[in-house]
Length: 150
Image 1 (cartoon, rainbow, N blue to C red):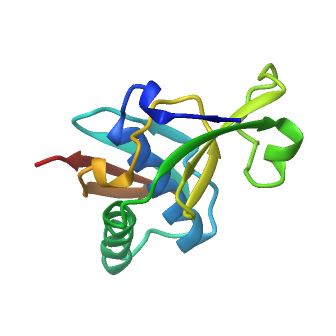
Image 2 (cartoon, rainbow, N blue to C red):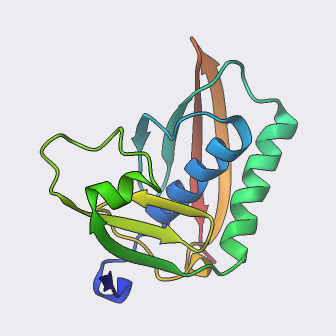
Image 3 (cartoon, rainbow, N blue to C red):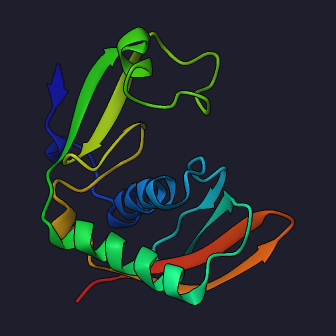
């Protein structure tokens, strides 16, 4: 079963967070952000890493997120059983009392994740992703970022 994302409130920032998470997993093999604060003006995500990314790597992260946004990928929602979802997404952050049917948000062929949040219909609606600052303490890389719309 699929849900038309037009019936869900749009949230460019939340969709950008999904792309950032997948980019971090792909580049560093780390888990998705374990602590995130998502706001329209400024957001932050924390990642468990062995070392602080270099400035060159930070530039690559920002560029890759913007490449995915510019690719105009469709954002779709699909409902599936917990068993089916476990084959394609990490369910470690799923609350124990979550229903047996899960909502999976797909961003083109780039990311799949169980999520109840609001999303855009297409990555082209997000705007430009900008990393504002970052720091590294005790194995946690905290990145502060925002989405800039024209």
